[in-house]
Image (cartoon, rainbow, N blue to C red; front, side):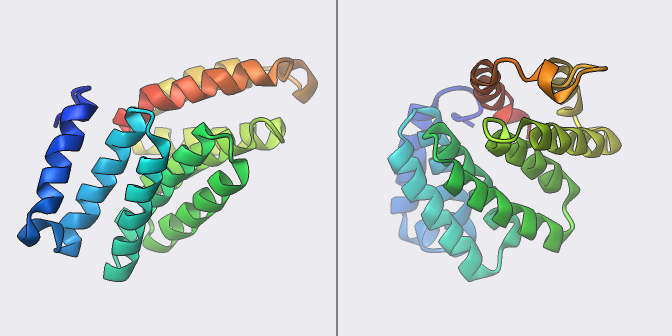
Length: 191
């Protein structure tokens, strides 16, 4: 609750206390979620190395327990850590893994989320492909009537305005990348 209310520091303290409890911290079903939340809180605090460590542990626990849903979450958050560190290769690797798992478990929301994330991975290297992924994510969000459809539609109006060509709409990729990073930070709590 602390994390969603904007108090990531208190969230980190509570989550670390929970993990110290042997009955709680050693049960993979609880520990996976706790490490995921810890990683997200650390990411919100800008502590990327610690976030990566917590999320990598969450991913290991999830895979070990056969928990593909939480493995999707871990890959998504690890991709976000990598994007914030401008490590596009690692971000893309985690996004590809999330896409594979989301497809395997048939989760359309995770599928849309990873298409949105893949677009962010492609933004600075292949704007046309990024636009395709954002449009695909938008269609899925709309089909699900998910609250992320509206902000993604607004983003598409900026990055892919009606009637645009690849050359006309991609004038300042650095500006788009900065706006996209801010957009992802703002919308993380809506997913």
